[in-house]
Image (tube, rainbow, N blue to C red; front, top):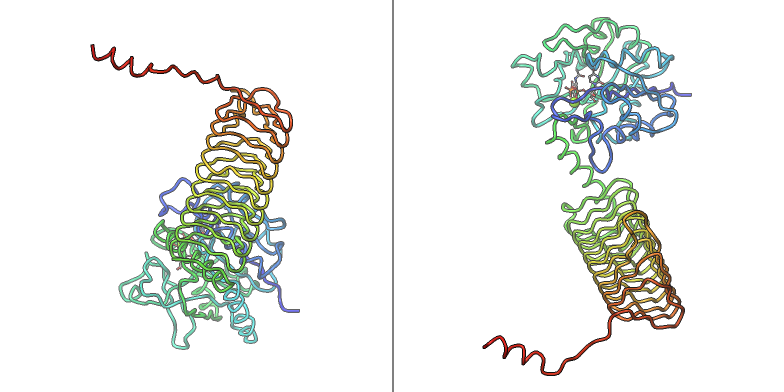
Length: 467
Ligand code: UD1
Ligand code: MG
């Protein structure tokens, strides 16, 4: 049995450089909070009961964002630095066996396989009794803000010097500390109390552990990763946008390699959990968000926004259509410029056209509402045609009421259907009607005033005006 791995994730800081009222790890990139990304990576490496998240600022919200059973939370009441944040976990963790891996909640790009490599590296080094830990480093074009890795003559890491404490010579070093560590747990807990606030910021720096272990006769190694992007830490909103772009790029690449055509992929935003089937085409500036799944051979038009929805094969979502929390069956067509607010079900082959709004509405198979309509709290049967300008008047100012329309019915343009109301199968509603009473199956209902024609009236009126 390989020695167990315990993972501590630091997420207590406010993140002053974000200039936000919200804790840094609650900001979102790639459609998820930063802390969710890091926790997901941790869960791929060890079991939930061996993961602890250190919380402080907005602790309750961070707990809610993680919401994974088994993960422990440790409160760091005062944020005295990254070293202090780990110290406060000692009792909660209980065990001091195996390896202690520490991750920062503000580094969401780390891939599980890279973290696994770090842990494996430490495991294999541990045949030497002096190998106390391995940290991740990278050569950066611009390492500003990162701790610098100071190596000794045997290439071990002698110390990490923080930006604020570094001298010009140290600042010129481009090998940066990525803030991802794997320590031998017994040694870490034995020496951690030696970290002190003796630095310009008066913080307990976790990075001081390296020099402490070095002085105690052990050594820490640095595993250099080729692509520093993977360990980028978010400190301000410029970093946030950069990391979001990388996460989006990863996602579109994965989808394209899986058979999805994405036009101008740099313009689309697709969240991490979205699934899309083969031969579907995604046009520029589309946003596909949350827990959406899209079938094969579909189209998501330019500028469309699809969130938390299920779209079956062959469905087409034309440009600038917004679909939220809805289920769309095979071959249905939506938009352009349609809005499906929430809890809608559009059955096979149904059409929802331009400037049509749906809320809590079921559209039967092959039914059509092609232009300018509001259908709310409605149930519409198969093959029914809803004319342009039809409005379900579902709200009386106090309560919402349902409209039920059967199959094969025809609702003429510009009709107001005052809910609650029922229209039977095969019924016809004359254009411009205001329907307040039930319409039986196969009947015609028409409620507009009869047309009056006054011959010559217009001409006479004009003549009168000229006098
Ligand atoms: C840290 C490292 C630096 C490294 C960089 C990589 C230290 C002292 N420095 O600097 O060497 O190059 O990360 O991104 O570790 N946190 C707490 N409690 C605290 C302080 C911080 O939980 O008391 C958490 C923060 O919420 C954050 C993480 O620790 O998620 C890192 O803190 P941050 O202030 O961003 O450290 P950096 O200055 O980036
Ligand atoms: Mg940071």
